[in-house]
View 1 (cartoon, rainbow, N blue to C red):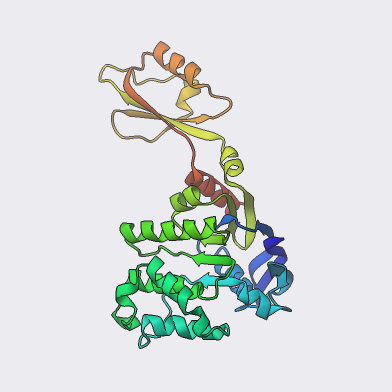
View 2 (tube, helix red, strand yellow; view 1 turned 135 degrees about the vertical axis):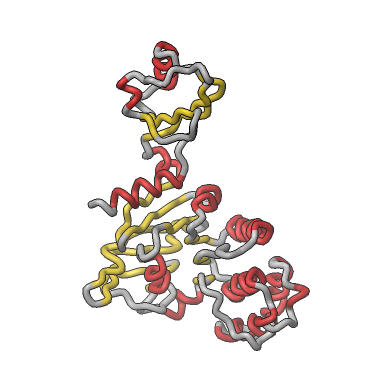
Length: 306
């Protein structure tokens, strides 16, 4: 069974199309990235899955439960960590988690799981502190625990490390990886593309309410057709390039040469031979293979020029 199934989902606010015929399937146990620029429709999609917004057209289901017709069951299968730090400042950490458990009909029998969450997220020392006395990073941990009180098999993380320091970010990712290894489906939205590239196996990119890419990470990265060759030039190096290479030149600091090469058409050995023949001498070289940042930029910029 699919963890999430979305078919031709649309959402309109008057003349504004927040989502337009969005379709995607997320496998059970996947670590899935939902990416896109601000205003792409990510939050709208999450809100529809969470039952906070009704779609104008299409349908969505969580583990087979329609988010509109079977909203109680679909909501129980889903945990959402919001981007905003929304909380009641006067409740303690334990009170917040206990109250959230009650929303799902869970009582004292859920206490061992709450204790496990508190320990796993390093909240033992803060369990009796009120929320308004916690740092931003600690509040973020509480929101993650709050989303997991009912052990949801599908977890949506909406910018979970926004504003979080490096040490805490690493701890959060260790915890989230452990959840995924235990079988939880993780859906991540983030503007830190290096996080998505290192963590996620499947990637969807939204732009202006439409899906512009949906593929396994390796397949998506292989679509990017360019790589960069950066040379550290020696003082006696020639500065005039052959016309075929001059067209591939990009802006670079003084004393460096940066060439944008096609991965299939421009063979590194032939390029270096042409540079040597032209008298271009260098002391060091680096080849930068494309990553998710380059793919993301190319797809979203191309879409904005349609």
